[in-house]
Length: 390
Ligand SMILES: [Mg+2]
View 1 (spheres, rainbow, N blue to C red):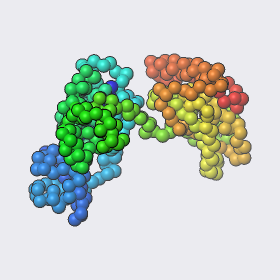
View 2 (spheres, helix red, strand yellow; view 1 turned 135 degrees about the vertical axis):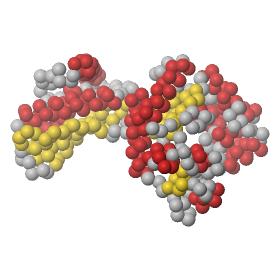
View 3 (cartoon, rainbow, N blue to C red; view 1 turned 90 degrees about the vertical axis):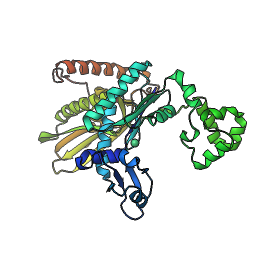
């Protein structure tokens, strides 16, 4: 099941929230110059027929008492970031599609209507409580249905289309609601008597394909309730790192390795929390003259365990020719891929199993840490660095 979330009148709602004087009033956000257009309109303004992309001068004519404000993109982006991070607490499978919209793969959740509703309500309440904004949600068996559903009861809406309701839902869906059906296509389709998605099926497939080509194929699939577009979660955190200025500048590799071990554990813990693996490990070195050097290695298989991150970073240090004492050392992991993507098989299968074992150890450490505080368990050593990259 897929959940689509769409914030209500996002820019305008933020302006109303930030400025109580305009709360509940006609707020229109947009370029204020002669040729500016409306970026967002509060629901109060929409009642006057104002909608996004409308020229500002026209909006002024239709709503002379409206409050016209210039967009504050930095502000909106910051709020968006906050919301996306809230969503990530519910599922790592988040695909932001715009500043105020995201898909969430909730397939793991039970398919029971009540459970899905509870999840949606929890997310809505969390957003409301944290950023004081409302959103609308749609839940359905695929992205297409979720997206249409989220638009059905705006603002503050929640529409759930269960798999057994899909056929009827699509049957009656007005054709212009289908993404990609603009004015021209709508007219073409309506001339053929197709006013709902269900009507598409009244024609033989080859007629639709001949007339609309690739888009026709898509229409046919959608009318049958098929949309295989996956939720592509790219972690918004493109990298994870830990670093620390040393108590005393040093060129002692043993001391430096201790720091690397500590940082590797921090980084690995973060990766596990984010449910991602890293393909690239970076070692950052700041010298006593403040010159910074980074060394990186890209691994054949994405890794997550502290042992493997430590080994990769320690190997980079072993290979590094220290000429000046070091003031700060850091370990980073980037090139992050989802944890749920199966690790590619390679000929060193046994190495992979070794990773897995270390990941199990890490998980135990995590769970004990959660119970008793993360400093309760301290690893002695993780073995001899620089020998192998496992
Ligand atoms: Mg929106």
